[in-house]
Length: 149
Image 1 (cartoon, rainbow, N blue to C red):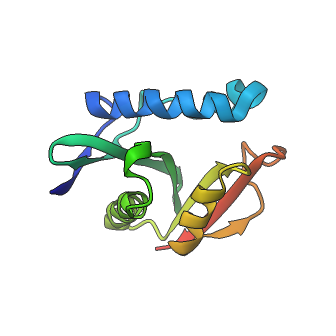
Image 2 (cartoon, helix red, strand yellow; image 1 turned 90 degrees about the horizontal axis):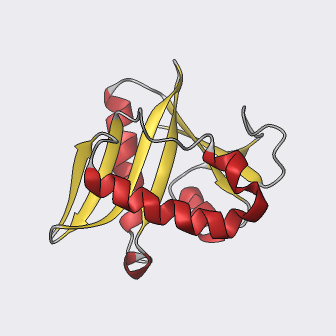
């Protein structure tokens, strides 16, 4: 059974998943990793989703307020052995539903140009590419996206 838990960044399963995500991104980002890492601190995330399959944490995501109209989707990750099973889109949907409960009309996100599968997932979910927003406005390897929810 697949379940989704609303929690915060204090959740130990979330911390473990983020550690795996950061290791993956460090390899992918190379020398750019410290730049991106500074924007991905989890100590103050109050809106976190952890996805469980039969009690095992398999994926996560979070959002934080960007401004009064938008939340920014952060820390999206699915364990490699569970990818391709629509877990990511389900986590994203849960985050959007939660953000809508707070009356935010839009979600934005940033991902890397090398993250082809993530970009396709976001496009399938209805996100469109926009000009890079701060702090990514001068970052060549970033892709920023938006969706009205």
